[in-house]
Length: 357
Image (cartoon, rainbow, N blue to C red; front, side):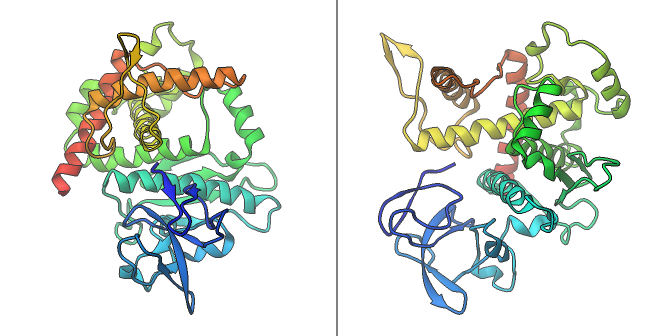
């Protein structure tokens, strides 16, 4: 994530901010420019980005701005659209008549918009359900039924990503993290994992990369349900970290890819944030920490430079968390086996970027 500042007063901003805390200027995110802009009202629901924001054509807010769950603007090229780029992929939102669901939806949208920031920064192809009625991307945020039967499970199927609304409850999510023996479980992590399944279909299955994938991740043709049953019935081997970034990645090649894909998103997004705040930490040379590569991890940094910057950063931030009595910021290990899988995803993303340029 980039570092954002208010163009009216210079105050540091967060990606989700809808108003500057200092000068109170309304803010809107322009996804086509990756800019969070201070806005000047023009009447009739129209807004003009202030100076220094590139294109200052009039824009409207996404319709979901009225619910305080979205601060994105609709580009002038889509002036007849009610929804921004990120919200156009919603198919089902939480039932807002259920107490607490307004706040749950807000948390879901924060995570989803950060997902789309990364997708756009990586210049990945994406189609909605109108563009591809069979396998276009769509999100369903679903509540469990009142009688408790057939609880909603988070997952992906042919472009449909289902997120259980209850995952926005911190207590529930933490309980499930402990019960499932997971080191990490967040809403943003769910979105990044499930979008990995979508991109497996788009970039691997339909992108001519199946054989390369199978050589690294294994044969995806093995029975999925049987593989899951075997996974949950057995104890993990002590050396599982040599090849898998998480325990769940062991269950099936599809899940291995999705977990590794999510970690690639974790890395490039967090590394961009660190670099934008000049939080670069490199290897020790002659007793001094050297600066790491300063270019764009989304588009320019070579894979080896990304890892060289990422690993010392995680050591430092894990140590900071421990100093505050918190759990590790990054409770994972990037071994040679995991690095090979991350490199495959990096190379795939760069191939797509080059083909689109």
